[in-house]
Image (cartoon, rainbow, N blue to C red; front, side, top):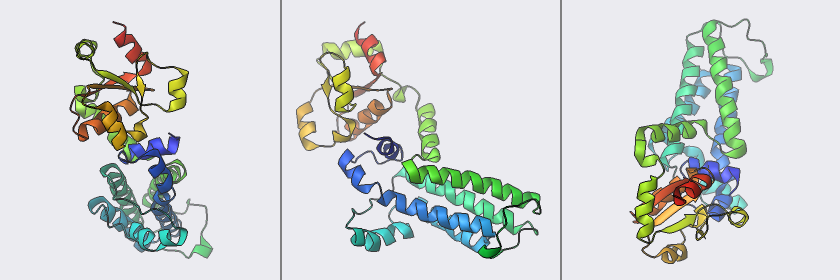
Length: 275
């Protein structure tokens, strides 16, 4: 799985295979790119109306998963031109990112609005100097710079800082539920005949893996044939660092496999199983 695909998993697209994500990757860049361009134009021209409109788009996306105007335009017009896949509904993590971007664009618009030095200017007269602006307008530029930087990263490799922060927050709030299974629990499950599953890619599995573990890359877990291969077994997953194996655990549980657990990283899994 590529870096971009792992970042899309973090954005909430966890029910898609690697092939499906590959087909969607350019489409999922479409809306962030347009929002970035319009927001940047609004910032450098101090255009409060444009910034407010982009902020409104973020709020629409946050509360209506299928109704972002740019997503709709892509699905009904652009994708037909390029014979591309239809964009799916935005998952919670991506919607929260849109909400955060909406608040930032709205805040920038308000800062420009309440600073008398920040008059709307035509694009042809844009200057790089902000020394003549008041403190509110300068703060707007700082916030704008942060937002544009974050949007560039999203556009280039799908890494979303707000989705990442959401994941970390959920991990902290989830406590033991998001932590790898304890050695004592592993011991009991192994005596019950648990199946160990390596959810890394085939190359990493071939290089090194736990003896007896079967390789099922994370992006293939939704495949019906894979589900039948697992049968009704208790499943213990592991990966590079425990992140993908936790996602695998949650995916399997959503499929009705309550007896699915996260061993954590390969190193931790080796040490726990050796006890």
